[in-house]
Image 1 (cartoon, helix red, strand yellow):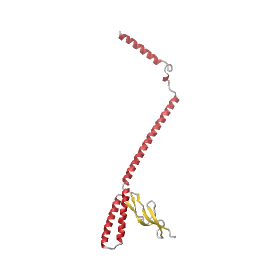
Image 2 (cartoon, helix red, strand yellow; image 1 turned 135 degrees about the vertical axis):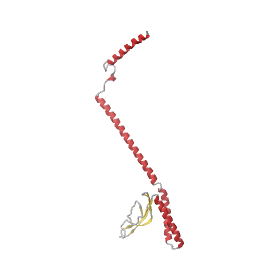
Image 3 (cartoon, one colour; image 1 turned 30 degrees about the vertical axis):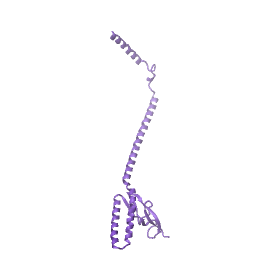
Image 4 (tube, one colour; image 1 turned 180 degrees about the horizontal axis):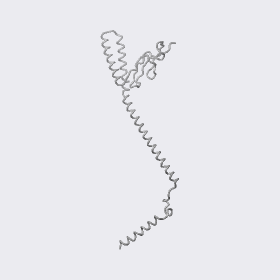
Length: 194
């Protein structure tokens, strides 16, 4: 008996649902109205603007990441390339002292001093070669035009043989590390004879 009652309720519920679905749109359910074409076009335009904005944001983020990566690579390269900058600058006074010792020993004509001079000369040559192996190069610009990026003028001397603003003599050699200046060369510069 219960099954018969349930069976009779089911067709009535189905009929009510079918009747509701067949009712004309707009009577009981305003949300079923079809949107207008201008409203759809406006919504599409908004969505396209959001998509374009997000695409631009992604491109900017990718470009920024590439820039960060390039900067990091350049910083690492410079760290490797110029790691010896301070160390090489600290070694240059030793080279200067060895050069002065050679100048002083060259003025004395003595067999004992000659042996010592040869030893200092060999030490200086080894020292300069070792610096060169690690990218430290001497700047010895005698006869070249004065370059304020690599030379420091100590005095100006009139000279008719060289063009004005040429390096006549080097008082102290300069040095570069992989092309970057470690210490400028102290030079005497020519000026025109008046």
